[in-house]
Image 1 (cartoon, helix red, strand yellow):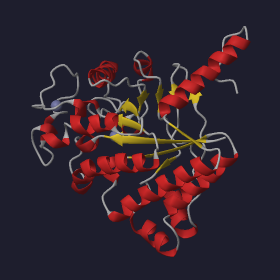
Image 2: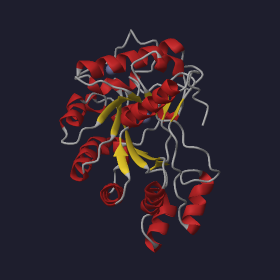
Image 3: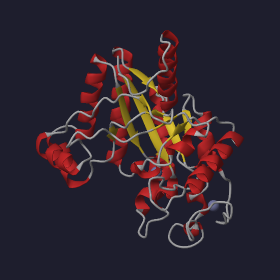
Length: 321
Ligand SMILES: [Zn+2]
Ligand SMILES: [Zn+2]
């Protein structure tokens, strides 16, 4: 039977520190959104994977990072400009809240300073440093990170990741030519209602890492089209999640939903989250759908391969069906 995975890209201002006009309303809402997410996950006993930007573990910072081989000015937003406020870049108490929550979450990492791994200018040395620092600060705080989310879902430097304690990452959503989140998918969703998000298959990549692809970004369909569709029927994203849950109740596969704390800006955003969590919990309680973290899906995937390898004298081939 199917499984639901919830992953959260927890970054406060780090998601936008390299942008010339960061979305201030989203950034200002991020701390409250973070706590609201922990509350709603506890309310429904839903474990999630929290991919945290490593710098948030620091209790203070003067914006000086000579040991990180990042391009000049990479950390300047910590000191100058609209975002220059320590509470947007350091949040050890919020990270600690993940560990203190009633629900046992999977604490993963989202690099140290939101470096885009697939970008041409990101060197292997920078990627390695970003992974090592994030793992170090998480371990110092008592966590043991095994899950990774690439900033902007830009997959890159997987060999560096495979050399670290990380077991798995969130891969890109399979292209289906018009899913919710794509441009054509948004047009179609506004006109006809959303399509069901895909159930994805975790797989072991050529580096030995488990790829747990995304199914649906819960806040990728926003704006006027979404409000229009919501006037006529229920929130189209909630309807899409229900379709995905129906599929997961019938067959194997993973429905991988994700979001950021800073997506929770308006009342409507909070309502959507509440409805999605309530639905996921209801399917877990009333059907055979399970809720798992990326870490647990990765361990299960790796264990299944070891079993297969044990049965067969030839080495396991991750490409084989
Ligand atoms: Zn800093
Ligand atoms: Zn991010």
